[in-house]
Length: 432
Image (cartoon, rainbow, N blue to C red; front, side, top):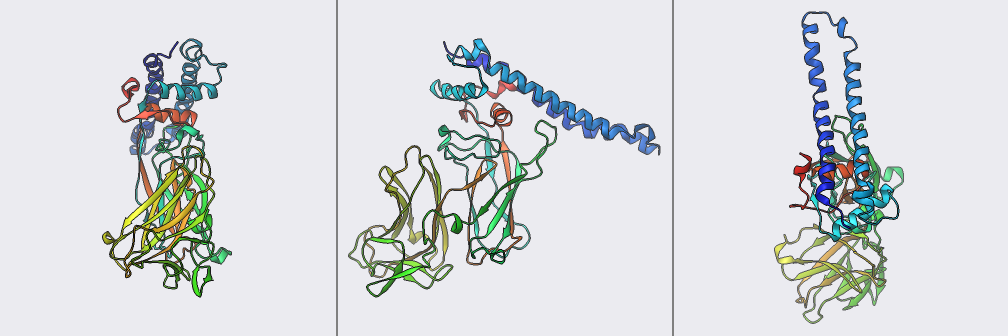
């Protein structure tokens, strides 16, 4: 026996439509209250309506209560014995079991609901920050990290774009720097949204206080990504903790002309050695999501590769340096997820693509790999710049969401996202 998805979502759609009608109606309460109060103010006597604010606040609370009760009817529909439990041959009718198996069945039956699409605006400085670093973002989930507060993760989410985001203004503010005992370049920040509100209330609300986060330099999984620690190799300084896998110290050297700190690493062509490579062993998690960031000082020709590889893994960014602004430091990054098992022989590396000529050189600094910190369906990484961050350095980004009606209710009511598509098999028209 199979679920009749048209019938199930027609039933749920009727409830979602009523809930959205409640919310729309309740948003107009403040204006209607002021309209009612206006003639009393005009006539100079508001005593008869002194309690009107409390009365209308009570109306708003009633709307929220009614919406919360209607969620119970969605739950009843999802756990109905005939429509769902027996149709899926479930061993029990717990909501957790139902939602888990419903997700799986929708995948197997190629059933989808309308996607929710979030647009993360670029970050703008609030005031005049001292630090000149950058904020990187991703919306691709890793399957193990909860993408937002009150939202669960599940392995099937790996590689999927998050659809659990709400409209908000995200603020990232530096709350601790070297004056608080932190290493320069490893400052701490607080992520937060606008004021969080009543879940089913009429007012638009934000995500409130989010997680704290340090810079990529503090959270990096690789060691000496700054290349500031060096060691002698045949009379030449080279980065400590890294292995020159292809070439030798004539091809890979520490260079004191760095983007930040004491040293960068320089890759030097010799017109003979192909694929000069510097690498380091790293440990990755199964179903992990990783951001790789680095500063590049490019040459005018040739290509350079920065990547992560291992058995069954090959993630990289190949940069044609002829397309870059020469003699200028530029920030580069890429993000990837590991769908299943992470290799035990994973390495992060810098590599010359092919054989560089004897005049080709390029420098790399602050190469870091780390797991983003998530808030409101967005993963964040903060990259230190050439000038260190300071307390009160603040940036903001506006997030706007085009919501799928069913998807938004699964997020709000149950903290999950269901299989979705731009052109779904289950139309939002059932909830309109």
